[in-house]
Length: 279
Image 1 (cartoon, rainbow, N blue to C red):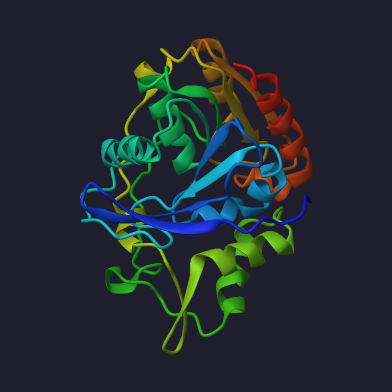
Image 2: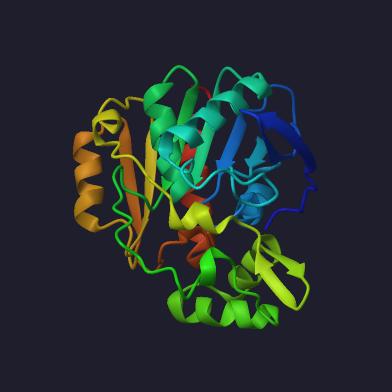
């Protein structure tokens, strides 16, 4: 890994809601800006190691999306694609950036696809990690995960990590530990996740296929070969139907490809970004 660079924390009011973000600063005049968008129930810090690797060449900014990390929570019915996109559009205006790179994991990848389709003049290139243009969240029973609609309190951090090891066996231990550091906060009696339970229970991703088919900007889709979120068939459909799309599958990775096969992820992502540095 590259030498760690400490980012600066900021809070900005976006659409009447306080959103937290970090800014690594520009390593050199004219360095391309990368905006990171994390996945559902996560925070910008899940991509911290990626940011540290890319910081010597790019100006990195990580956003905690509404209801996540250190950002303010939203009403239960305001975790839909268009609400998230309205935040992102206003956030980009706040940054004053006319052109930049987007990298999104899962839910953040969904928003990356939407923003790239809607604002092709702004996006130099984009990476969407392990997410299709349309994702059916299904009818999930959250009563055990969120009893009474609230977070469980975990007596120890290990109690939170243990089930993650079972559900994500390909993720190295450092990945689970990083997720714990970034996603948990200490409360009386133990530890709780930072995100709003409603952000998970009421996530309403929009079907973006029609919009995705208009994307002509370079869009790199990275899939985990063991992922249950993005199938090989849908990835092939994305390659065939989205003009700007190209893809790769990391066969020994699950949904969190940048944890499960970090070296390989950084190698292919860095090559993609370098190929569009002068775009």
